[in-house]
Image (cartoon, rainbow, N blue to C red; front, side):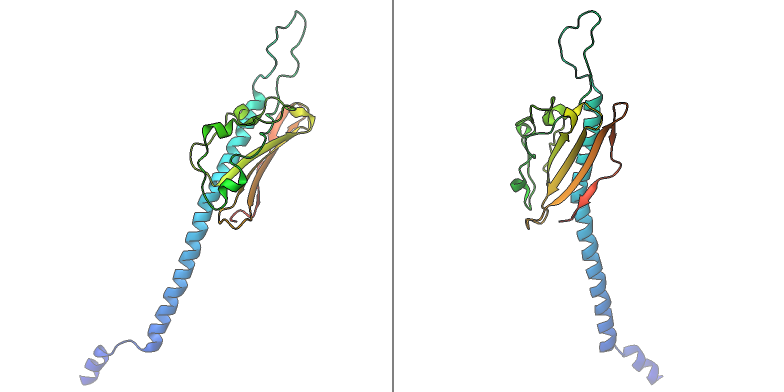
Length: 197
């Protein structure tokens, strides 16, 4: 009977306590890693979603009628009515504005410059793309080869960000090209370089 009482009053040994502390420490490290990964994925979702929207907007802009507004004479044609939107003069916002921070863009940021006159129409206004919420990434795109109307003309949209402010940028990009039959094909996947940087 005395032996039963002694066992019931006995506490944990030092080795048992050390094992429990080690297990709790390992679980804490795994939880911290998981939370950091989740937060990084939540931030990079902005770039993925916005680039997907830019690609869709480029496809919509390409399919709309964009011919000149001149009066056509009898028996004449207006020419090709589809064209890619030309890229803006620079990223919105400037890359220095997003280094390790969020940036709240102004509506005027999305209309500034409105792109190169070599490819018309151009700029974010052509895509009707803006962002109202604060952003981690700077967005831009370019349309090249053939002035945005010929088969083989391409566009490349990209998002650059510096989530931790160390000067190393993560880059997301998506491409598209006008194919035979004047169909705009968009890549099925984005290219991601250092996505969590």
